[in-house]
Length: 248
Image 1 (spheres, rainbow, N blue to C red):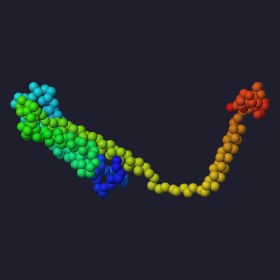
Image 2: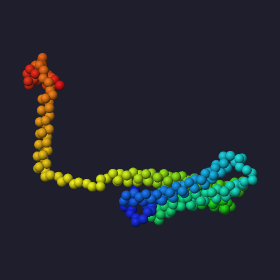
Image 3: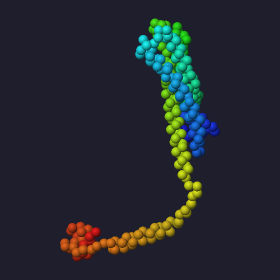
């Protein structure tokens, strides 16, 4: 998206955060796609139980066993969501930090800020619930956390990155196939002088007009006109051949 950014090695654009493309023919290296795919599947497998636990405690709290406390559920969510945020979302946080350093804010800045704040707040609420006002604490002396939001958002962002990289890979393969259709050799046809070119073009058009008239005379039919007027002429005009009318 920013052609002025040129690097000697693979990386991300410091302006928009997207991966850089090779300037020559596309290569078969899909290391970034494989890495993002691995991070997505691992993050999705960990984010799904976090989402189920969080939605279960909010929608059907009576389904939870009495032996499992809310603090224990928060620790389980923390254990499942932390690898998703810190390991799965590490490339996102790295691009977000690069956007801050380069003073070029983009979507990775927003994602890194939102997910980072949600995870940091949740850790503080789980470890230090006493620093929050009593109005924010529940009857079990716990503060609501947002581990499921951080994990699910990061998994969806990784899914978007995988889809983007896969589409770019297919586009690069199509471009490579088009480059393969280019001829190996080419012949240069020198143009003639303007005067000679005009003479040849004029002679070519005259030959075409003469051949058309000859073919017309051979294939045409003539018949007697009862109105003494050519059918192709205007009604108020006498036929040029007076007694003959053109019929196709």
